[in-house]
Length: 98
Image (cartoon, rainbow, N blue to C red):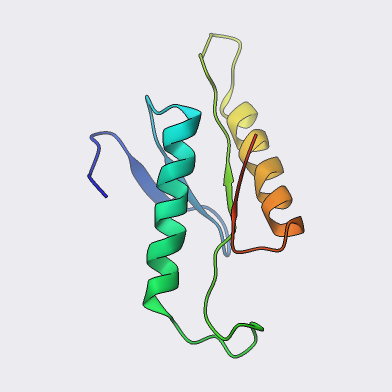
């Protein structure tokens, strides 16, 4: 995966990570999230409490097609959070987008 200037990954709460991808459309954001999940799967980190025995990740992708002055950080966070819960309800270890 190629680095993009301005991208940022940071811890966002207990077990959550936020990956901010400025100037990235929905299609590419989903592709990046899927690449991250695949790289984590390939690490095969042992996790006895998980039925498949390794650490897995669920990803929620929230995208703002255009940003205006009425938008707030809460708007994109809400979209990503909604998508994350969709990914979890779809069986986990996958990507969902809103």
